[in-house]
Image 1 (tube, rainbow, N blue to C red):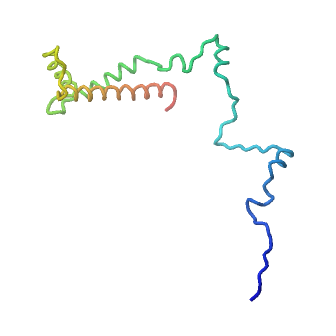
Image 2: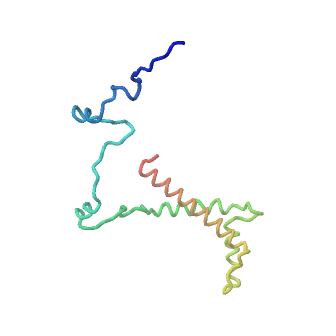
Length: 149
């Protein structure tokens, strides 16, 4: 049996001298890592300094952040009233059921509606549909006018 001798050898990989050490790297040239996926470096701006440049007002959002448009409200309301007025629930429409339940609850006005009343179901369903229609209308109308799609 032959005895094996332990010899030291370098392992090829991360420990080789092909990677420069930080001291050699900084002395010869700077390493510039860039990618097409990364945005160009932007200098950090102090928002308080920008506020002083604009007359002392500091605002986090644009002045017209909602970008309210009455066309969206009008078309959204019509866009919800039309399908919710189709009589598909036992020959009645969602709008009709909701308004009918309002009349039923107003008949005993000082007393509030009971928790088991159908009024709450129609109220939640009707308004959920309306708000969804208005939200998607705002997204679609503004997205179209600002060339998002």
